[in-house]
Image (cartoon, rainbow, N blue to C red):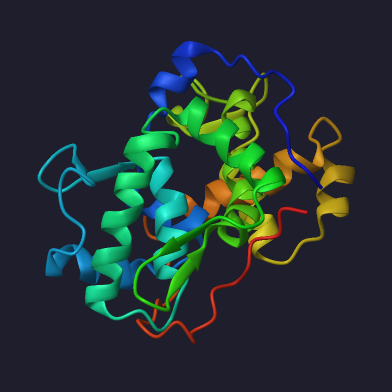
Length: 235
C-alpha cells in the first residue's frame, strides 16, 4: 500500500509542533537498534548539530535523520569510523540538496524520491557505497504513515489525562497500537472500531513503539544487529 496524505497542505501548527523527533521515534521509524545509536552518541560519533538538545536529559533530531540512521545503522558491518564518515557525508548531502530539517519537505521528498530514484548511491569508502534508493524504498512508507497520522489524533487535557487519542473520540492511540503489538489482526480491530481505517491502525502501532508507556517493559535491544527487530508492517 502506498500511503499518501489525503491533505497535502497540513495544518501549519501541527507541523511546527512535530518539527523534531525523539531518539525513540527516530530509531523506531528507521527500524534500527537504539542501543547502537546511543553508544555512538556516547562515543562522539553522533554530535551536535546533528543532535538538538532540548534539555540535559532530552535530545531530538530532524525528520531527515530517520533516513540517515536507517542507511547507517541498518548495516551490521560498518565499523565506528565508517559510520562516522557515512553520517558526515549524509549530513552534507542533506544540507546541500535534500530536505533539510523541515518535516513537510522531508516527507514529500522522501516519498517522491522513493518512487523515482532507484540508483542513488553514497560512497563511504573506495568500494563501499550506501544504496540510498533501497533505503528510501524501505523508509518512505513508515515516514509518510507516521507524519500523516498526526492529523488524525489529538491530545486534550480533558480526555484521558492528555493521552493521545483519535480525534473526536476517547480512543487511545496506544491502546490500538498495543493490540497490534500483541498480535491482534488489523481486520479484527477495524471490525471493533469501524471509524478507524487501516492506516490509523498501522500508525497506532508505530506510535506505540515510538512512545513507550511508563512502566511498560522494554524489549531487549542487542548491539548485534542479528538480534531481530520485529518488522513493522506498513502494507
